[in-house]
Structures are given as C-alpha cells and as structure tokens.
Length: 355
Image 1: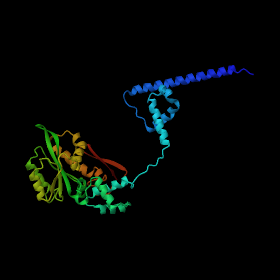
Image 2: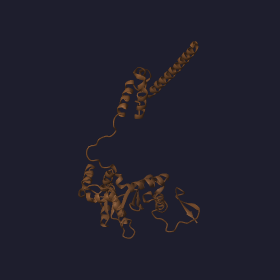
Image 3: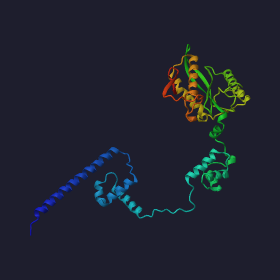
Image 4: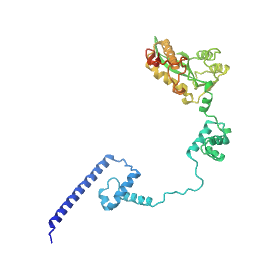
C-alpha cells in the first residue's frame, strides 16, 4: 500500500491554516461590531423586520454557545426568539377572518366628509345623489353614520364655514387692515400708519390713507372716501372684513353701514380670517418697503403708489392663476425682443415682449 502520510499531513496543515484564518476573520468582525456599538453609546439600535429575519436565519445554525461568543448587537436569546417567530409565521395561514360587513373605503368616507363640509345645506339624500353621480352607491344610513363619526351635524344644524362664506361672496367682499412704516423726518424717526383695502375676488388694492395720527377724524374721512358713490372703492361692496383693532371706530363702521357695507370683524388673534390682507402686508414689505430708507411722508406715498401700480399692471398673482389684475387691452406683440420695465430705480421689475 502506498503511504499517504505526507498527503494527510499536507491536508491537515492546510485545514488548520484555513481554520486559523477563519477564526482571525471572525475575531476581527466581532471586534469591529464592538467598536461600532461603543460609538452608539446608550442609543438603542433599531432593526427592521427584514434585518431581524436575516440575523435569525444566520444565527440559528450556530447554536447558543457560539452565539455567546460572536453576537454583539443583540443577545443570543433574542436571535433565537426571532427564529421561533420566523418559523411560526412560515406555518401560519396568512388569511385573517373578518366578522361582519366590510368597512367603508377611506376614500369614500373622505369624499362624504368633504361634500358635507363644503356644502352646509346638503342633507343625506343630496350627498347620496352626488355620490351616485361619481360612481359610488352609498346608503343614506351610511352617510349619516359617517358624518356622525366625524362630528358633523345634519344639514339644518350645520354652520357655514368661514372659508365657504368667503368664496361664495368674494365678488362683494373686501378686507381692510393697518400696517406701520417708520419714516425719517425732521423730527427724527416717525411711525406712519398705512390703511389699505383689498378686494377678495380680484386682489385689487387701494391705499385708503397714510398718517402718523390715525384718529377718529382721519377714519371718518376715510370712510366717506371709500363709500363715495362715484369713485369709492367700496361702493359696489357688501362686506368689509376687519380685525378687532380699536382704530376701526364706531363712526367708521356706522358710515360704512349707512352706505350698505356691513363690517365683519374677525375673531381675536385669528389672522387667518383676514388672510388676503395679511398676505398683502407681507408682500409690500418684503418686495418694496423693507428695501427702502424712506425720508418723509411724500416719499412713503410715492413708494406705495409705485408698488400698487406695479402690483396691478405688471406683477402676476398665483391666487388668480398667475394673471394680472389689470392686464393690458392690447394683444401681446410677437417680437422676439424682451425688455424690462422698472419702477423705483429698478427695485421693481417686470418683463414683456416688444415688437
């Protein structure tokens, strides 16, 4: 028989070398995991379900004794518990028996609630008809239960929302508000009060008055100007939305009421109820006034007039589909040349084509 001792010795040597290399690689990976865990400190390592499944599948064949040596992220008991859950889930039939009638689809519930909140006068049958038009056959009792679960009262007791009221009356609603501007004068820095009115439907703005002393006489004159039968900004309006500022005096409100304009006050500390006016204040300050050092009331008035002209004739508005408030009656030229129109020394710019 041929002596194969040298071959067995070579295989044993090679096997021992491979085992040592594997042990060294395992020791390195274990130490690397310990270093990474030290960096985490007291922060808990959160694993995903997929990561738990992978660790459970790899850890089960090693057994508890070897896991005690190599597992550093989680304990061996945790890995084995994950494996038991993995096996149990594999042999569990995924179908879940549901008792009773199937629930109403979320999209249908949301549509019912939307119709009820946007249309205060719609009852159950009216909503049922609209739902049928869009392809949903929903019972009257289902609509009633959905509204009740969402805290929405039946139509006779359902109040009209503030947003719905504003949208349905936008053509006859204007809003007014004050903002302050500090102006340099011979007496030093003086705070001026600017009163403006904005039309909800068109976003048109009118500067009603500028003064350092907004007293009752000033407000009375402003009210007469706004309701003038010829060129008053409010002569076609029915509602004026204002906040609870005491500057809107009883005499001011009475003059408007005599002209057929009802003054509607917002709730206390509710700027969103006068959102159009609040937004215009941000616009005029950000795009114009905050970039100017104003000297005297005349300078302030000129800056406001220039900005309002730019705002009406040259600046597109997202609230009205990026249209102009006062578009030019002339058709846009077909020329390729684009020119810029400037106001206030280039502070306000707009672009147009020219022939």
